[in-house]
Image 1: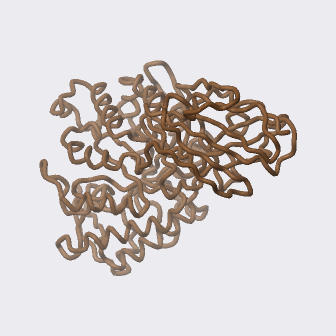
Image 2 (image 1 turned 90 degrees about the vertical axis):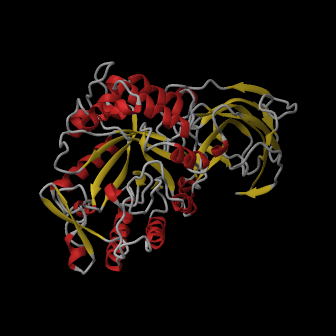
Length: 525
């Protein structure tokens, strides 16, 4: 983690020399006098910024128990402030499925035109609907059949000779594969490769949640063919390496669990010491981290909070509540909650404690019973509060810039950056290295960049709530014609010709149509 420091570096970047450093004082931009005008920027504290790995996740699925009229309902959803459109609040649609739904026959996948199962039709309806509403999608899936009434792994895997174990759900016998079995690993690798060929696409997909292993796909209560935990690390490395290899552009979320990869679901206040090692190993392999029991004082407790806070600002976190309104009933009183509004507050407080980047709006086919209904009708203020205070909201409160610069001369800019949200902008993870801080000289008539500069030492992942960061940046203004320009700033996607990619927390009228924050007019002489 980078803290405040003084550093002056000279680098050659795309033919333009760029030098910058953080200034030691958060109260004085630059810490020294600079000729020029001071530009103050007014932040936007309420607009829903649909930025990468940030915001509310709306849950959905493809099974028969879910609604084919999903968008009709969620475009006109009841709330304590009237009817609302859910896509106005959410950045991402999380779609959950089982492996057997995604691959009903070997090599035939439900995202293709050749498959027309009910699950395939729902998937396409959900993905297309999310795109139409300016949302990205995320995926979570599982392959373990325990607690299910059907087999979650395709039949062809068993037919190829994969070792399996049977369980009974009600009166239904189901089977699941042993994840250390080589036939399973070969078949699963083939599926994940095909899945990534379609969805390793950051323009469409926000993230992949989990590796699919263990009970409910949460990577605990795992069973191995050896009858003990001997294969635990081999399987963990296999699945982490598989997802890291295939999903190079989209973050993958590893579950933070105190019994990760073990045969234990829970055991009081105990934990397996190797779990912390494996969570850190997943992070080292390029994965981010999530937890699925927020608000539950037993299951989201000292170990989970300590594990996650030790990784704070190293990777972003997904936060999912643990309590389920339709099934947990009066048991919430055991955690000290008197009603579901208090449960929502408990989940919110836990998310804030770990500085989570995302929060969940879980799905129920009974609209007025699910977690989404509860948030919007029993805790609507927290829905808006997370948008205003939780998601990362980046902006410069002031800049000092000269009114003119000689062609080929040095342009020095002093600028101070803030983050109004408790989460951080995770540009330090491998999939987001393409995002870079940039200044630009815009054509004064078209707002199109005539020159883009990419300072090496300005890192938006360092901007944390309550800690302004100051910089002095010096640009060599060459390869640009003399004339009048607009000086602008943005966080750009270098894989897309330096197009602005992170929505800054400023008034919309201060932005160009492409998303550059326009600072001031400047003459190149």
